[in-house]
Image 1: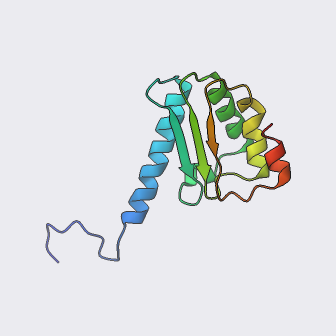
Image 2 (image 1 turned 90 degrees about the horizontal axis):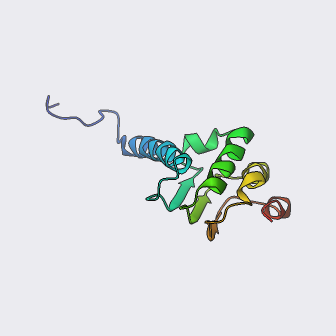
Length: 121
């Protein structure tokens, strides 16, 4: 093995690095939402690959909803691939309903039931 070779000798670690990048981006975007950053207009994330999203508790989902409702620049919310369930979406929308800037939401592949969907209105 060449000493200049930075590759993982046990296999490809690009998916692990990609997951870490997604988690760091998620945390940075949450901070930008709290700061009402005018450059952040879209918040997106997938639960299947982002441990930060998977591990959020009810209080954190409710805090995110509060932060989004106080943000005047965020326009689009795209949480997919298992990021949400009925309980999490209920916590998120407890505060999110008051948002005046969100005009697009996408919650694909989350397996929400009618109970979860009703919590959004």
